[in-house]
Image 1 (cartoon, one colour):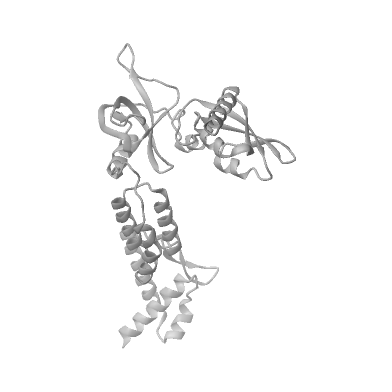
Image 2 (cartoon, helix red, strand yellow; image 1 turned 180 degrees about the horizontal axis):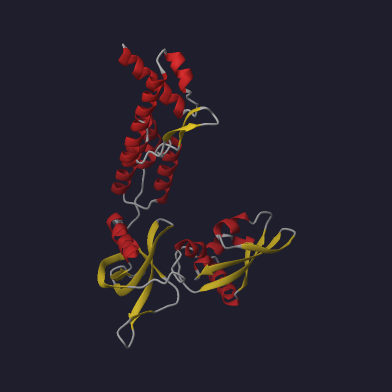
Length: 335
C-alpha cells in the first residue's frame, strides 16, 4: 500500500511540475501524511528519471529549487516532436513538391507519420493524406536520388573536388564531363540541384574557376559522380552562402549577378516582393511602383512573362530588349 501511495504521489508531483506548477515540500508533506524527507526522496527520484532521459534522448528538463517561489519547479522543454498539424502540413508539402518517386515518397511519409504522430491519431492523419498518396504522379525521370543527395552533401562538407557526367537538357542521351567544387544542394520547382563552381586546369596544372559565378546541375541528370583525391580550399570571407544565392536566382538559371529595375502596375506589389527576396521599392506614384532587385542570370524572365501586363522591365536594357523580342515571338504564334 505504501508503494502504491509513493508511486501515486510521485506521478502527481511530476504531472504538476510538467504543468509549470510549484511543489512545496512542506505542503506536500502535510497533504500526503509523510515527512519532508520522503518528499525530498520523491523529488530526487524524479530528477534521476529526467537525467536518464536526458542521456538517452536529449530531454533538457530539470527540477530546481526556486527560493523566490519557495518550492521546486521544472525548467527546460521535453524533446521536440512534430504536432499532428505539423505532420499534416509537411506531408502536404512533400506531396505537392513531387520531389521523389512514388516509392521514395511512401517510405518517407510512413516514417514521418509512424515516428511522430501519437498512435490514437495515426489513422486520422494517414486517412487525410491517403487520397493524395494514391493519386500521386511521379516526375518523368523517376530517378532515385536520396543516396546521391547524401553523397553530394558529404563532399560539400569535406570540400572534395568531384568529377561528373551530366546529361544535357535538350539531348538527354548525350552527356558532358565536368570537374566541380560542390557548394550546396538546393530545391526548386520539383527538382533538387547541385550548386557548384566549374573548374578547369591552368597551364600549371592547378584547378581554377571557369566562371566567376556558380553553375547549377539538376541532380537527377547527373549520371556519373566520382569524388577526386583532391580538396578545394574555401576562404571564410569568400565562402558561398546558399541562402544569399537562393534569394537571387529564379528557376535555377545561373548567370552573372545583375540589378534589374521593374515597374509594377497595381495596388499591391506583394507578388514581386515575395518572389524576389532582394526586391525593394524605390519609388511610387499612385498604383505604379518602381522596384529594384539583384538576380543571377535570366531565369527571372520566365517569371516576369507570367505576370503579363502588370510588370515592365526598365533595366538593364539588354533584358528589356529580350523581353520585347520574346513577346513579339509569342504574338506571331497567335497571328
